[in-house]
Length: 589
Image 1 (cartoon, rainbow, N blue to C red):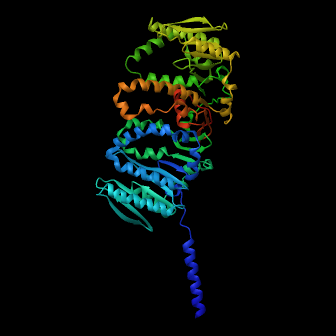
Image 2 (image 1 turned 135 degrees about the vertical axis):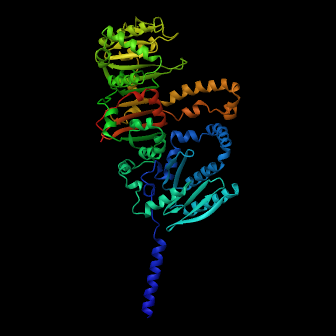
Image 3 (image 1 turned 90 degrees about the horizontal axis):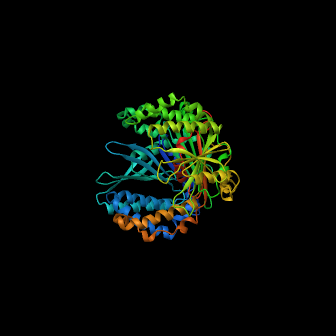
C-alpha cells in the first residue's frame, strides 16, 4: 500500500511538473489569421528590428532633436482635430506602448472592410507575449482602467470562446475593444468577430488559416532575414467591395483594373540603408500578356549620355509602338468634346500626305527610353533630357519633320516651327520656336539616340557627354556604389542621389514657406517655421539610392536600396513616366 501511494505521489509530482513547465501553444500571425485577410504587416523579431531601424537614415532623422521639435506642433494640431476620435488616439497610444515591450513577433492585420452604412475597418494586432507576459497583461489591464476613467459609460466584460478567455470593452457610442491571450500571443482588436475568427483558425479543423494558403506560402521563401514583412491580398479586398461593385456595373465589367493575385514585400535594415523587395504576382495569363512585353533593359546604354551631375536617372524597356497604339486606340474609342474634330482632321491630313506613323516613325524606335535630371546650384529650376533609342535615326528625323508640319498646319502660328541649329561641336539640332515664351524644346539625333530637351543647352550637354567630354554618371563612384548591388536584365532602372536632390528641393521649398507664412495665417497654426530643421540636419544622413524592376514567369519583382526607399523611389518612377512602360518577361502562370 505504501509502495502504491509513493508511486501515485511520484506520478502526481511528475504530472504537476509536466503541466507547469509545458509551454503554451506558440502561434504566429499566419496561424491565427484567415486566408481572407486583406493586409498583413508583420515584424518577425520586433526588438531586433527596432534597434536596427534606429541606425538607418530614417531612424536617425526621426531622432534628430530639430526634427522632433518641428514635428511637435503638427502632431499637436492633428490631435486637436481628432477631438471626437479620442478613443482611437488612446487606443493607438496604448498599442505603441505594448509594441515597445515586445521582443518577438508583432503584427497588424486588416481583416475586413465595410462600406455600409459608412466606411469602416476591422483590424487585429498581435504581440508575442512569451518574454513579457506579465507586463503585457498589466499594461492591458491598466489601459482598460484608464479607458473607463476617460469614458465613464464604458463597460468591461469577460467572455470565453471554448477554452480561450478574452475581454470586451464597450462604450455608449458603440466603440468596442477586444483583447486577450491566445497561446503566446496577446491580441487586440476592434471586432469580436475578428477575435473569434483568430481562435477558430487554431481550434477549428474546417478553418482556412493564412499560413496554409498557397498564395501566402509561396512567398515564405523570401522572408528569411527580413525585419518587416508585407502581404496584400487584392482578391480578398475585392470580395469585401462586392456590394459596391454591384452598384457600379461599369466598374465591375472592367476586370483588368486589379490584375494582381498577391503583393508580398520585405524590408531589411542595414547601417544607414534599407533594402526593400516587392513581388507582385498576376492573376491570369490574359493579364500577363496584356502587361508584359518581350523587352529587357540590358546595361542601360543611355548612360553614355548622362552627366555625373545627374540627380535622377530613370530608364525602362518600352514597347513604344504597342503602347502608343493601345493608348491611341483607347483615346479614339472614348473621344469626347473638341478632340473629336482635331483627331479626324489630323488623320485625314496624314493619309493625304501618305504619312504612316507606325511604319515611318514608331517601328524605327528601339526599346530603351530614359530620362536624366540635373539641377545645379546656379539654376533655379531643374533641367534634363529624354533619350529614345532609334534603329534608323534619319528615318525618324524625316518622319518627325513631316508629322510636325501637318500638326502645325492644324493650328497655324500656335505650335511653332522647327529650326535647325548647330551645337558647339557642329552637331545639327532641331529647336522648336514659338511654342512657349522662354521655352525652346530641342531634338537632336546622335548615333542611335534621339535626345529631347526643353532647351538647346540640355541637348548639347548630352551630346558632349556621349562624345567623351565631361564625366559620365556611369563612371561615378557614388553611382557605382549602389548600381552594382543588382544584376542585369531588368526592365526598369531608377537611380536617385537623394542627398543632392533633397538639398535642392528643401532649400527652395523652405524659402517659399518663409515667404508664404505671413500671408497664410492658418499655416502658422499647423507648423512653426522658426523650427524648420537645417538642411544639413537631414541631408547628412542621405545618399544614393537605386530601384530596379524585373519580371519572371509569375509577375513583377521590384528591388530598392538606399537611405529613403521604396515609397520615395516608386514616386520618382511615377514622375519619370514609369506607368508608360511594358516590362520584360515570360507569360505569367
